[in-house]
Image 1 (cartoon, rainbow, N blue to C red):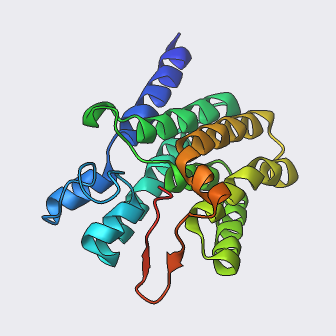
Image 2: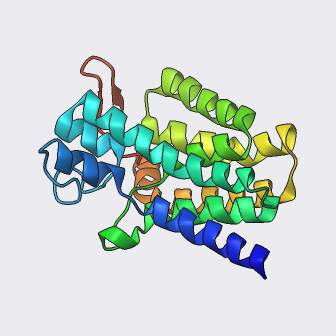
Amino acid sequence: MRLMIIDFLLVLGGYLFGSISTAILTCHLMGLPDPRTEGSGNPGATNVLRLGGKKAAFLTLTGDMLKGLVPVLIAQALHASPVIQSATALAAFIGHLYPVFFSFQGGKGVATALGVAFGLYWPVGMSVAGIWLLMAFLFRISSLSALTAMLLAPACFWLFKPEPAFIGVTIVITLMLFWRHRTNIRDLLNGTEGRIELRSGRDRQNPD
């Protein structure tokens, strides 16, 4: 019974931690517009970059990654099973997408999904991040980079850490992430998706 309570608290804690909107809090603390009502309307690092520049975007990106990383590391520190680690990771990701503290209006989940990958097995996190960087360098399209990286994330787990629970939760996260990016996917198919603006340092699309 005690173990079940701990497992429940880990999953619940993961969701609540994921529900802390780094974008909204960063914008509030830095005196920037609410990212839910300005720019693209998405509370993620890309929109914060538009609204407040690189420092605000970096803080948002870091916070969103930590939301996926920290709950998993806590579950590991408490010697939770791979299934509970995966459930905690999924709960944190869902919290980012549908935060209870912010009217269930969250981001698209790329940074949090990356944090989850690092938490479950850091070499996989490095691989996913490397795929994103390579795709961004080749095509200069952030959403395409994120979607490709997450599409290959389950294969990375299969290669480096073939734990069924980790592979399974990564597939679920990838499917949810693709759903949240359905507008970006439509724009990619239509050839109208924005490109990374290297000169200005801004990405004018909305991958997260």
